[in-house]
Image (cartoon, one colour):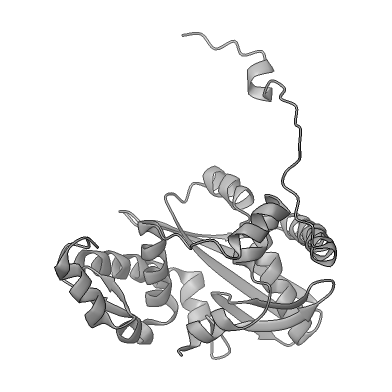
Length: 266
């Protein structure tokens, strides 16, 4: 069992599961046993992460195969068997991921952090937290320097546009993920006097733009408050073994953009 398999097998609430409470307790309970989906963008994202933070693990985790990835073909099935648990990628996928990783590691913020002797990359965190008990997380990069905690999370995305990143960050719960990781650091290393939290965004398609965003104090406060609220919901549902959906009834009102007096002339 490799380190990733050990982490996945270890007990504890991780963000990948926890985020579904934001939909409803029913969604959270369902995804615990639901078949795991995989998308090409996620495959590429994992490869870029590994080449950025753990390039020495490439040979043990991936096999480059010159063929068409079609599970219906005998050739690809043979490649999967040859890979023996490793993920199969094509030369084109490998080259594209290398190009993105090269752009990421050349960024001055990332370059400086990766050069630090005290940097921790892809290292799992395990802690106990009220009211849910065991928790775990695997941040991309963090540094603990006395009472100074620094955390960075890398997202591969389709744009580095500030507005689009901001919308997606809160829509997909990236702020909650950061709060989860920072909470882990605090429980393990003590309450920090200073916190720095960064969201690093890299485009998966050319020209492979990369950009580093710093989470504001207001964003982190909102994230911690929302995470605390969701943890309380999870604890209550677990205690009573009741997992409701979003509600029996709802009301639909006109969206704000529809009711706004729009005087655009065509």
